[in-house]
Length: 139
Image (cartoon, rainbow, N blue to C red; front, side, top):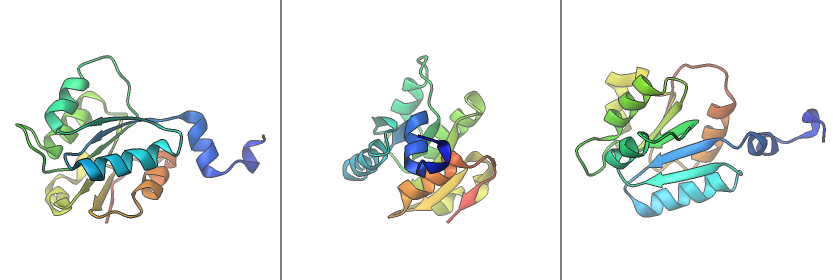
């Protein structure tokens, strides 16, 4: 199939990005993970920033972090975003949170901010992954 005739979803599935989702609300996490897997992307799920940071100590490559801000544990989603920004500068970061207003003072931490509920999250993540730019997009 010629690249010109492929849909955005087919193109994205060919490259199969690996996504790390850090979200403590299980139904939100499962729904988002399922929707992302439907794109053909690989997804690893954790329920806290602490778990995500521990996972990132292993030699795994992720293209995208999708995190909530307020989660149980010693670290929150902003701490996780800082950790990723420092150690994995090529990884894109999306924050999906009911506390998205907390990002106002830390806009350089992420590429995309969405307030919950984010019904268009998957579409916006698709756009983020295909975007060449590195600037933040806020909603």
